[in-house]
Amino acid sequence: MPIVEIFKTINSHYIYDGIKCEIVEINKSSYDYLFNILRNGEKFDELKLPNELYKLHEAGYLQTSSPIKMIEHPYTKFLPTFLNRKIKSITLQVTQKCNFRCKYCIYSEEINKSQRSHSNNSMSLDTAMKSIDFLSNHSIDLKEVGIGFYGGEPLLEFELIKKIVAYAKEVFIGKQILFSMTTNGSLLNKEIIKFLKENDFNLMISLDGPKNVNDKNRVFADGSGTFDSVINNIKLIAELYPTYANELSISMVMDPSNDFDCFNSIQFDLKDIDINYINAAIVDFDYDDESMLYYSDDFTWKIQYHEFLGFMSYWGRIEDKETSLLTKPSLASNINNFKKFKTASPLLSQDSPSGPCVPGLTRLFADYKGNLFPCERVSESSETMKIGDINNGFDITRANRLLNVSKLSEEICKKCWAFRFCNQCAKKADDGSKFLSTNKRIEHCPESKISAYHEVQNYIIMNEVHTFYPEQVRNSKQEVFE
Image (cartoon, rainbow, N blue to C red; front, side, top):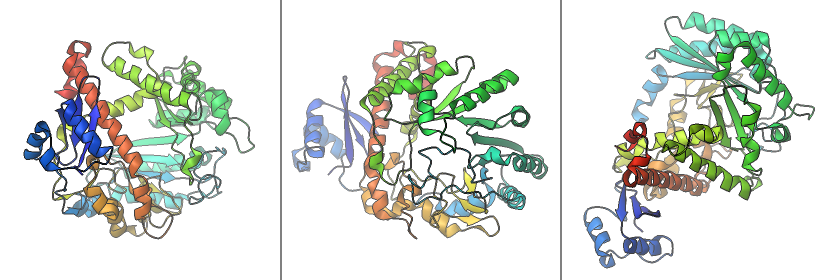
């Protein structure tokens, strides 16, 4: 089987060669030949290739064996240096307490039995100060560091947060500190808002759409809806500090069993506030049973339509104001991802799939006890995902294992056309046991390939518009493809 994937548009046909990491335009007969091989299971015979494909094969395309001899992440040998000197930020779990009981929360025993459940544990000031010291000692090469606050609901420990901020400013004299917090927004008041504004907090507030949608999942511990409380506090920020309100981010988890229009109407609730960014994501519930997740037809076609409008705006065919705030992040992500098509190198003899980050380098997470994890999205109950603690430092062996998680499926990865587009981190291989699971990792391969397919497809379409209809593309956007 050649290590390629095929694509077609209304204008042409293409292959993405997974070894050379290039997109090549082909004719219809070549496409049909490869379609029968890749989709219908016909045998690939190098001697019976159509003339066009034969010439490509002679030039090194359509190879059936990978040049990779060993899978190893290129940063492996630099890992000790990165973790000892270049840690960019730390997120502190100041509490596991929460005044909400969101129905999709990963700490709900009904949703994810492998995670911890809600508790009354909070971080001590001593642990918090040691965590700040740890970041200071491991960010020697950086002029800027980030400190985030996480829960539970972090504002339940507002007094602790004030002390941590004061201590951090003493420790990081001469360095810029970027404070951040994701909050459910229900506990915001004049005092807290003033503190966050004065300390330049990057504030993200969770709100899952208008009242009828938000209150289905995001509820207080007594089961009552949370929308009114949160939206009133957002309006309070706008009333007190209009400029700061414009810098807010809204984190929205979209349950795809709903109609997309339900979520999109949140723009009307926020019409009096010039919110620049809504970080809307299709629901990423960490269900143990993924069959619990259902996508309605209305959700699927409407979000695709609004993403299309985003591209139309990018091409200058419609005004930005006609697009949905909810699809702007995905459009921005697509545009940024296009750069990889210009910089992608062919597969090497020693290589590693995209996907795993350098564990702890950009989003180091310290739980309330001071245990260290790559980020806040992994399971705190998993010894496999733990990469050290603030008292004893990093466990380089464990971090190395997470960085090189693709070794679990080495032979499969070598032959995968989506090698350069894989989005699997080590979390996908964590089944709660003592070691990372090969089977668990392989289970997620189909969704990674679907994501890769859409990424290549979007690039091809955008490139066609630039090539065939240059007058429709804004001049300011053309540099992406030049």
